[in-house]
Each structure stands twice: as structure tokens, then as C-alpha cells.
Image (tube, rainbow over all chains, first blue to last red; front, side, top):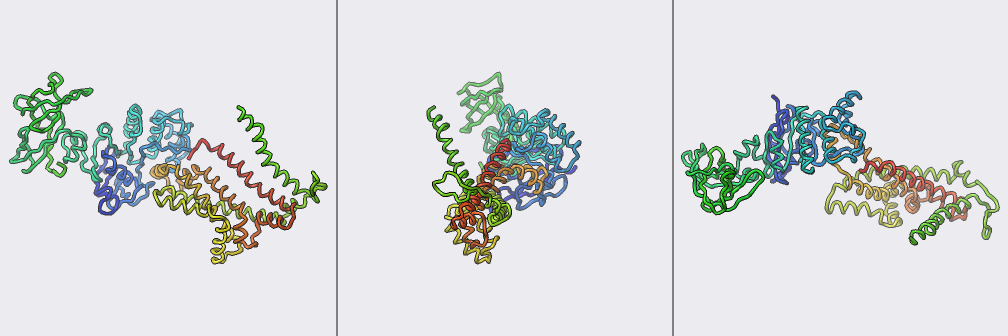
Length: 341
Length: 263
């Protein structure tokens, strides 16, 4: 099947430090890919370059198999939604949603039925005649989403669409995004700095670090197997242990693990669930406990190394207590790129 | 309370009288014959100067010439002002300040100083004493005013709306027709009127660049006044007030209608 969006070797900006460097990825029809990155990582630049709102130095953008790299924004079949809802302030709700249809010179009856259908889908039916400044923030967002879908784009580009909303409105708009996308099978490329939002919306998550796409994977794989130490740290994976791979075994202060990696120095990174208590583990002293909504996280010290783990709810240790911990093999990612270590 | 009463019953009526009284006096002078002090009212009335306007005499043709110049200046100043104001509003730092200063220069420089400089330039272009030369001269301060006006308009304008329209499928032409022009309808009208009024009131620049050959209404009023023909001068002066008064009314009407659609 042809990808809805193919980005190949995209480089934006000139000189020794371009804003984006050799970005490549695909988005399948109906798929939601979320690119996660810190402020200034180049997320918005990526969306704007794909939308044709920025010149690119190198690379190709294909939408539904068609090379649109040299096309203006209106011929790309990719609708870009800014972080803020941007209605056309001089047009009513109905006319805002009808905007892409009028441009495509559809008949009055078609426009009426499509707009009515979309307004029902975003629960704005009955507000057709209202002007945008009379709508609430959430309603404005839903209206601009409906307007975007009226264009029936192959690709929907969302620039932190939930960032400016209250938590209660976020859930509402997130639901609308998923619902509309499912109805129209558009591919979605979204950028955000919010890990939770990325995990909630993305079929796949891309991590953008300093203008490069460091990794793009499903959320499960990404959190278990970060491609590098930098990605692991960006994702907030709390534990790192230095060790050495020799003869198919990773040896560290926490014991040995089987691995297929080549011999050499490596760092094992893992989440709080990768450590379990057991008689065969190494000794660790509990330094502090942090109580969360769902569970307790214990900070322990192992040979000068500070680690975090989630003890079972029925046997939470006390600070100062010594526990025995061992690593769960399948939950440790080994990073051999030690440039960030 | 006393302050409000004083304002309402004394100051406001005084202001109204000070604005209307000179116009009333001008109207009287424009239709009077042989009216000298200390007579309170003119002994005889005449419509001679007004007939001159209607029949296309000196005042009538000067009125039309001024109208042509002001309309052309307003239109061209809007084109320049929108382009420059938009570009300057998108700049930051020294470029923005330098641009604003350049736009402000012809506004701030005394008309005589500006006029002499422009006269030399217009003569050099071979346009001295011509309609085109005077238009060029009027355009310089008008474009300055209108550019400054549009710079402020575009500083509050969200350019992302245009990007949204483009990715929704609007070509540049569609964008202009369906988004930009409707959004800027009111500023465009106001900018045009600003340019119009700058040209309408010009005397020094017209005199210096036109060399007396381009006869505009302010020039004729000045000439009649100089020749002691008060009746014609008063008629011309009254005609000069017509567009500004209409303008204020139109702007007020436009503001009232478009307040719901802020840029």
C-alpha cells in the first residue's frame, strides 16, 4: 500500500547547522505518527516544511505517492493546523467549515450536506450562524478540525493541538481528533513535547533530538528499546547502569544479562519495572520512597549508583532497609553510543 | 458632578459653536455682496461663486482636479502602504525601526523642506509643473502616513490565518479574495481616506512642484484670498471642508459596522 506521507532525507536550513537534518519516515493511511521533542528541536519546522510553508534545502516529500516537494501549500493535500485554533474571524461557523469546499467549487447542496455532517461530528450543530469569537476555546478547536477535514486531506499536520487547552478540553479535542481521523482515514502527523499526549495518540512515536529523528517506533518498543542513551534520557527512563558486553553477556553492578550485542562498553537503561526483588539479586539500600497515585517508587543505592524501582504494593520497603534486586532481562536496553554518558 | 455639568453645559456647546461658527460665517461670506463692517448682515445676496463651481469655472475645475489628485494619491498610497507596512510589521530589531523611521521622515519634515527636495527630484525627472509630478509629490508624505498606519494594522494581524487558508487549498488569489481583503476592508478604507486627505489639504507641495500650473482647490482659495476676492475664497474654503466631513461620517459608519470582525 502506498504511504500517505513519505519524507525522505529532509533537510531544512542552510549552513553548518541546519534546523532539520536528513529526516526520513513514512506515515500510512489512517495512521497517527506523533513526533516528540523538546522546544527548539525542530518539530514545528518539520510540519511547516511538509506543509510547504518553509523552503527545504534537501530531500523529498511525497503525499499519497505524489512528489509534492516543489508544490505550493495549496497543492500538497496536507492541511496544517496551528497550535492555536485559527478560525477566519470574518466568517460564520458554517462558512469557516465550508471554506475548503467553496474553494473547490462544490455545489451548494454538497457543501450544505458535508458541512452539516462535519458539524454534527464535532458537536457544533446548531451553532452554524455563530461567529468564531462567540465560541469557547474547545469549540473553536473542534471547528478548525472540522474545517480541516472538510478539505479531505491525505495528511493532517497537527502542531501541538492540545497544548493551549485546559486539561478538561484536551480530552474533548483529543477524542475529536481520533473520531474525525477514523471517519476520513487521513494520516496524521502530529508534533508535541508532551510524552503522555504522544503515548495516548500515536500509533508510532518519533523522537526528535536537535534536528534529527533519533528513533521512530511504536510506544511499546520505544519505551523498552530506546535507540540511544539520549533517547532514553529524553523519554525520562530513570535508570542507567554502566557495564561491558563480553562473549554475549552484559556484565554490570546489577549482575549479568544475555545479549546479542558486540563486545565492548555499554550502558543498560531501564524503567522502574525492570528491577524485581529476589533472593538472587544484588544488595541495595532504600534511600527514599515517592508515593504516586497508582504505586510507590523507591530510590535505592547500589554500589554508589542511584536507581528507581517499583516495589510490589504488598511489600513496600522502608527507607534505610536493604533489599535484593535483580534485572529482568527483556526490559533492559543496551546502548553502546556512550557519547552522552 | 460639577465638572461633568461644566463640560456638558459650557465646554461642549462652546466647542460646537467654535466648529460651526466659522463655517456659518464662510457660508454667509460666500453668498454676500458688498458686506462690510460694521453691518451685521450682508445687504444683498448672490450665488455667483457657487454657480462658478457648478458651471465648471475656476473653482469647479480646481475642485475636480483636487479630487482626481486625492483619489489617485489615496489609491497609490494604500498600495504602497499595505506592501511596506506588511513587510515592516514582519521585521524585528533594527530593520523594523529603520523602516518606521524612513516612513516617518516625510511626515515629520516640514512641507517646505520636503517640497524643495521633491521639486528638484521631480524637475530632474522632467515632471515639473505636471499632474504626474504633483501626484508624485503628494504621494511621498501620503505613503509615509499610510505606511505607518498599516504597520500598526499588520502588527496586530495574525499571518498564520493566511497559512491556514493556503494549506486548506486557497491559491494566492483566493487567499486575497476570501480572506485578506475581507479582513482588511476597514483598514483599507481608512488608509485610502488618510492618503486622500493628505493630498486634499496640500498647498505647499502643489505650489512648489506644480509651479502654479496644476490648479488645485487649496491653490485657488489661496489665490482668491490674495486677490481680495473673499466671496470666492469662502466658497472654495467651504468646498475644502466637504470631503473631510464626509470622511469622518463614513469612517464612523464603517467602524460601527465592522467592529464585530477585528483584524
